[in-house]
Amino acid sequence: MKTDHAPSSVRALTVHAPRAPLSGSVHVPGDKSISHRSLMFAALARGTTHITGLLEGEDVLRTADAMRALGADITREGAGQWCVQGCGLDGLREPADVLDMGNSGTAARLLSGILASHGFTSVMTGDASLRGRPMKRVTDPLAATGATFLSRQGGRLPLAIAGNANPPPLAYRLPMASAQVKSAVLLAGLNAAGETRVEEPVATRDHTENMLRHFGAQVRVEPMGAGGRVITLQGRPDLVARDIVVPGDPSSAAFVLVAALLVPGSKVTVRGVGLNPLRTGLFTSLREMGADLAISNERVEGGEPVGDLTATAGALHGVDVPATRAPSMIDEYPVLAVAAAHATGQSRFRGLEELRVKESDRLAATVALLEANGIKVDVVGDDMIVHGTGGAIPGGGLVETRMDHRLAMSAIVMGLAARKPVSVDDTAFIDTSFPGFVGLMNSIGAGLAA
Image (cartoon, rainbow, N blue to C red):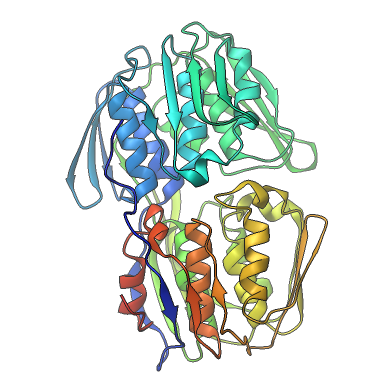
């Protein structure tokens, strides 16, 4: 499947501390996790779904392309406004070409569940970063559907899937917390007669469960010991189109808010941010560090809690973040590490093994980001210990982003708070999750060179 969405050239950037405080009120793009799921579920439903606030980043555009290739009619009607004419669960067709998922691990892993439970053959690939990321954590449980998977060594893309149109219901206990694996198993269970059951040891983001209910599926969620949950899905539901409003992505809001907390004198509001409690671990951690982070105008939109967040700059202190919080903030650790570098005292982030299999080895990349800019960091097992500078980040380093959009944005935030300019080797991949990031930051006074 040919697309023209991939970033076409390297965009290096040197970031200086702004001459004045950051200020203003902004919207961030729609939640990426919900945007992916909106397109997938709308394609699997009967009828026409209108989506408002869809993230139009590279990752989500790949999902739109893939669902079109599988038979859904998907059109863009305006900025963030999309219309999906669904196929129904039995209406997907074999794609005529390879499905190129670009940089999106979420899209590739969730789509695997759909493809495993339909009776045709498909092939997925991605960019160099995605082709290096493991898929066995998804294909191993999905093999119980009767689907056949053929991949490169280590379970890496390209991945060929010969699906089974009559899969049995699955029963799977996640060995580690992963919303992507949970969602892939539930998506496969949609086409199975009977109940699919997933046990997760720690509660992970529940957008898939919420959206299943939104489209008419029967989903039960029951507590399991030590903070875990059991999710049960009744297979072969009649999914019926329903409109969706996508809230602002808390993972994207994180970069704007942390920048406001670190640049002296700043005060910035991000409006309409998703406040799902399984996504707000960063905000909890920042408050524990002493951050002035206020929530206002709380409401519910499209089944998800939403509110406006205002960050006011001030002193921060070190924090000890428990491993149990990792699923609710797994994408925010790099920018939290920047906040910890600015804070007074030592911060310890526990249980970060999941960071090793993100767009890059995000744990190693975060350590390199900090060390390149004069911050002392220790890694003990799967824990990262950041030694704060009390507001005196040296800076002056070159950050290798490794095709990782969140690392690039974290480096930019660090540059805004550092004494010396921070160089970022490539910002092109920021578009995968946050198109217009540089422009938005400049609108609040960041002064980033285009």
